[in-house]
Image 1 (cartoon, rainbow, N blue to C red):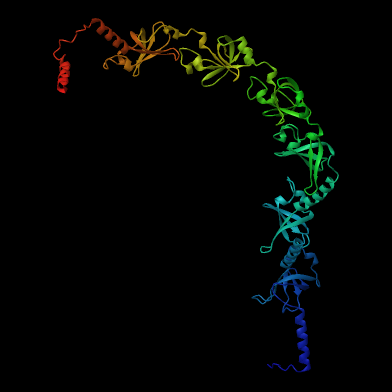
Image 2: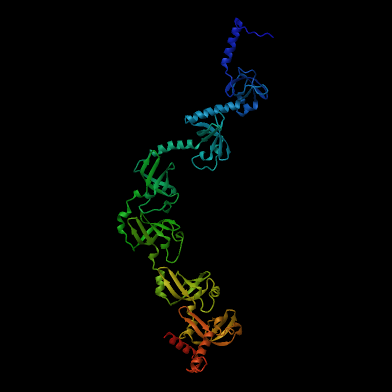
Length: 576
């Protein structure tokens, strides 16, 4: 084979010139996007001609369908492809139209992001945390978080799927090739432009009619005006009286007139006032006096009371504790409704705190005072058992709406409290005695056993060491249960008090029914306490016998009776 190295001939120089000019036109480099012309189309492949390559690249027809270019596939048309490899292990050229389209789309997204411009896209499907958005121009897929779909909660987004609309690019990850977009920013920006035009219609001092209560916050109440804009009434601008929270005054959906007091075009906010629509009622608060009754109008009802108006703009709180003398923790909704005119007495006027306190119960006499006048302590009154617990009964007293407290210890003198409590049921009629009335605390204590003769009166005039005849009821290891003759009360003689001799101090000596004498060892009328002792009786009898029958010289004739005296005399002599 002959190799020509002589380039001096005109033909060789012309060939070299043509070859260099052709290579300079097509700069072939892997990883670049280049244009190729379609030369042939089959059922499976599209063949391209790219100048500078030694063979024709081939693209799968399905790839063209995936990027939506199947309608543009025709011989002679140009297609942008990414040159992945000039030659693979099989000697073929590897190109990709899909990757080329994605890279070109990414460049467009980058430019739109840098220029702060919106892009056209459509939601294609839902995914975890948001939706997938397709870029209309390039077909690139982007992610839109659920919080960026709209500026308000939406129950369904089905009506947005497949609809071409504007999106703002909020984040680009060049390393991962991910794009995050927002529909909410576009919606909010349009609303911001519209809101500015609406606010321009208002000026300070305007009166807004029939604004609707839309919501509350800890610092004020929001109203909707003409179904186009929300305005704020600050907590301090609601009323001349003190207001802790807007829900004390307003209900959602109510309509109120407002006065525009401020406009902020930068924040696009309108501040309004309700109290400035009327003069300050506290300027003539001196017209009202503490302790006098007035008609008030119920304007709002809460769980803890009613908000009332003495006059328009002058609000006051009727606390639930001031509604009734007898009903505790009563629900105001059961007694009043909004708009009611009720009688109340002013109990407090605080000009510094701009607060007026009222009471409804003071318009009626305290039933505890009436009860005390008609049934003073010691009086008997009919009642009905209304309820019970583990230690007491509650008895409704006569015609009064008052429940008396009947402790189990006041049911019977003789029976056990827990047993006596079980004998009484709800609805039972009882005659009870008034034991105590506490008007300030609104409490009444009554008793049932006080209607009977007190068996403890049996011991009046008795004292310690007195001898009482008792009858043995029963015996056990603790001692003897006895009942004094002529008394219905039972008492325990402890084992240690049965006899002087420990051998005789056996409860088993008694079987029950025996009549024995016993001495009173302790008596306390205040505590209603008495202790009996057979041992004490024996000691008293022994002492009496000794005192009665013993001689003063008894024991002097014993052998050692004077021994102690002699020893004492001896000690004295030794010390001298």
